[in-house]
Length: 443
Image (tube, rainbow, N blue to C red):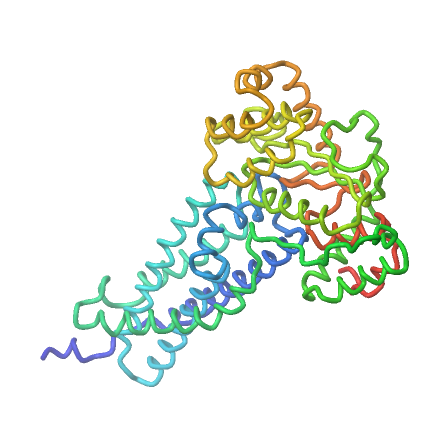
């Protein structure tokens, strides 16, 4: 046997240091993204959600990210943490064995395998981000760290890639073993992380005669009790949202008269939501609003539907377009249905079919009720519908949204979180209600 086959490969002293630093940085960033994801899905706003285009929440809530979460039981941020911890463990083992004078061929091969998997994942997740039509700054930083780690392993670690057959088993054993162990360790918190499209509102439906509970001492007690059942992260998100709501001014909205509204005009809590038919979070909001209307006493809430398609083809404030025209067609179809008696049912059907939408399916669903397809097509093409869409966009831009959904409560920007909307409805839209006194201080 040749001496070269038995010698431990020579590793540059700086290599383990760089690998450990990059792995720690990537792990901490992935953990931060995971925490921000929970905050977003609890009704808060991520720091990296800057505009409609530069918006990490849009990427995190994309169809691709949702499929990964549903398939593996953990969000993509958790997979990033699994990778980072695996990379850290391998780099730490390499450093130890190198200092102890033990063979490191298998570990060097494992680090290269892990780097290759990370680089391929960056490509896959990058494509998913492009398809979501938004830029995620924290995701780009993660990609840079992973690719930097790969650069160090392939530049400074000895050995061929892929490892020779007689070394491959050991390399895969190290890499896969650590990855599976960390994945299983993170699976439980991953399963507890709310999905982008599985938002629910777990509140008791009102009992007969409970309408007087809204805003009363009993209503205050119900809200306070509901808030205590929320996880701490949701309580904090609700407190932060409430503080922002209290500070926000009430702009003059007299130029925007209601068009499609369900519920009494004098309801104490009046919600206006701006949605995009292809927005996953909007789909969740539509489901939550339906639950909310069933959960609060009659007359406590009204809901008005508005459109804000995230497509530059029909929205002058959006710079990008995916060329499909689905968001624009969905918005105009809903505007045409506003006066129809089955508007709300058809709206829910459009959002329920979100993953399968085509132009033909939008027209098929929208014309499956009281409006014929010919009449619908004529309405969609009309100047009046375009004018109404432009009015919705102008209305939304009063609040300078960075995406959808945009939710207004009594003329001020609120949150799409079901818990916050339920609490506000039960408190008669009063942000100073005693029901909120048990919340933690806002950050």
